[in-house]
Length: 614
Image (cartoon, rainbow, N blue to C red):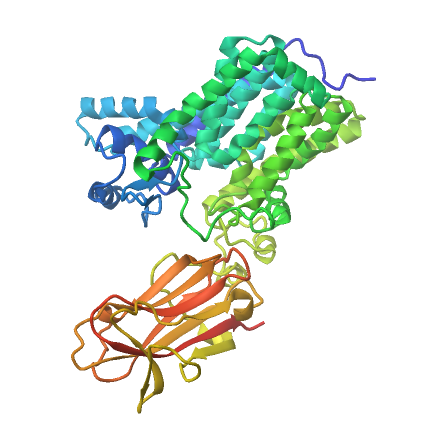
């Protein structure tokens, strides 16, 4: 019977593959250098460094310098990367991990900017180049370290094939060239280091190895807190029984203390930052109620199989890794329980995020860092293939080659705008499968609805929609302290001093539509008296999750409307596309918000829901 691992001696093919990958990726990164590497989420990761070392404003109290940077470098359309705390400071919503890892390269960029005379603003070309070089460094570290890990379990030839499969057969290729500043690249490297240190620690525990392991775990967590799942790797390595694991920990209490202290040491800057600028040692900095963890309703099937962003649809190579977990069990691999538990819990965490498609990206970017772990069962799977009959062996290798070609081609399609980063549907996918020309308008109509991030939306194709729901709050029934009777409108609501908000019209998303979206036309009538002086009153349209947690907040401001005539009834209107709601029970809420000194009448708050005709 053939050895499932192949021979471990001999060639250095995997070393050649590693350095070829590093060279190819480095060349492609250089050729595709972004105009601004620190943009969108990455802008938030990086913001700690210039705010601390250049502007000395870690609390972002002087927001003008941030706005000036954004105006020059176009880092982001909106400053969602931070939010105000009860102490009045602004706290960055992302943890400090990427900033810590990028610090040496930031200092290199700052020194380079001084030498060449570039602006010392943290974002000029020397900083950009140094930041991208830092991402490349961690990419190279990750793949070099992963080779060491795989050589522990597989032959050199298997390792070479597994590395090619990961590098070119998955979205690792896309993220590490066009999104190298994102957290996933850094996490991949840290996971590879953690697995390698775990292997070495179990061979011979030492203080040095414990400190390195603890620092690595700490960095992983402060890059992305949900990656705390990484502790399962050292905890369950070689797992046989709970009693054996407890006994191991008891016998290595000193080393365990070093690991915990090292993890804490990495977390100290984050804790101090939160305490100073929020007043709390542990602070939930992510303030967008439209996104969050919904642990009771994970989107596991969507994450795996949806044509919108299904992992196994766009990265079928990882099917091989999943099958490899079975062969890890059959071979009684020391990492079987660690890999299995990590995969299951990590998938659950990734799937529990309400925005399970993780914005614009190719395939499931939130799973990319796990490839450092999943490469192990992938290597075991490849080893097993070699033990099969020749026909099956070469058929499966041929299928793997097709997966690589498909992956690279679809990444090219994505970069050409043929595949869309977050609007894919099954119909659109199959209509453009293998296509090299731009999509036609007919094909684009198969995509999911385009959702603009602008404050004003235009409902231009109303003729394709029909009204399915209508409701009005006319103040004719019931009693209210602010209810006002007048001859022109029968009953209306008087909003003025001591009354900041009108009653709200609330409607659940499931009432508005049974589909994934609806257009809503919201309106209300307002009556400013003849002495009206641009009173600050707005019609607010928003969605509400939980108790008063608003998202997709839009307004029509009375003082900005040119058509308002004092002493008469005036209509405020707003077209509003429903967001991708966190729960179908979330409510659309429409109301008047008052911030002025004049009394104004409000009447007939109305919504009409439009759904596309089948």
